Length: 159
Image (cartoon, rainbow, N blue to C red; front, side, top):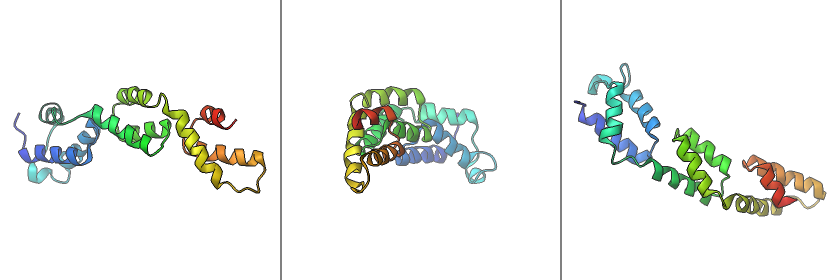
């Protein structure tokens, strides 16, 4: 299959710069090199078969989807983000849903309650002291819920 080498080079550069999911990379190639797109007159246009060939043959050894997903999860855990927040962000990146579910379960087995505890410690110091005890608890619960933590996990820590 004869594909303009500049298109393949663009796909490789884009992947190595942004580490998008394969679906997101496919969207980007369509946006750039599909008929009536920005660069198709200069470099030619590519079909769906050619896009599949680029992703499956030319970039086969470069695309490391599992490692990218695991790395993103570790970064979000390091920033003390909740499991639901991480899942939403990875879905927005159009990553493989099965891999997301698998790696999230592995990563958050022990972390979920620790993350809620850490969030609780940060928030309780910032709440005004002139509020009643119930109001303080309610404000803490509201803030933790806005951070995407599950109510059941919050109850285990606070109550």
